[in-house]
Image 1 (tube, helix red, strand yellow):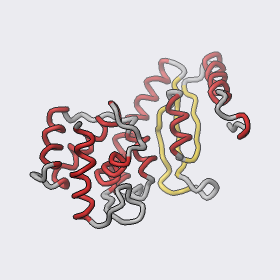
Image 2: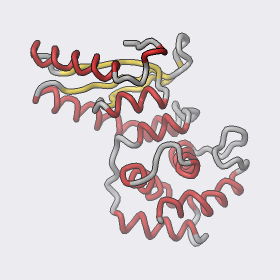
Image 3: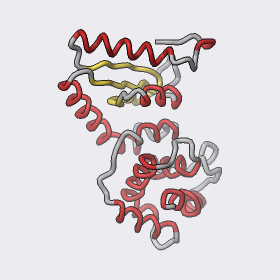
Image 4: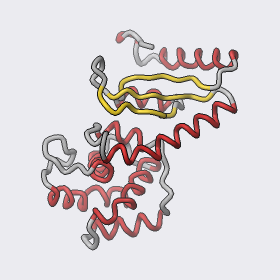
Length: 207
């Protein structure tokens, strides 16, 4: 699906998808799916329509230069159960992929994916550990699961995928990113990154 640049922001894409969904309902189709290059703007469009991510390619596509992303929308009760299962399976796998095969994934894409998931660690636990990290009482590396859970909470409640501190926390907590150049906080090296996370990332989620 594509909309001419001069006709964008008119709701045409949404209407096209709604027409496809209506036809899928009539035909008895269980799932409607789409695949496209994982770019934050495109992801926001499909997520706003209610589509769920079920797969992400491990390497960049030659044609788009992006990782291929597959999303689905259920169009029947059976499709709803299937979509929930597929999306949950992807979310369970995602942290491991981010630590290895997808370690170089662009942080804004990373946060868009994480925003679809949910953490099972309690709010009280994550808040207490975050404060320990923020005030230097705990090494962030020993608090990584709680900080990952805190990031999920931030995305679900009030932060946006464009907040620079949240981008930094996501890149560090899931991808171990401490390099220079692309890093959202503009610092290099493990010590500098962890210090910046203490000043910005953990406290911005806690406030």
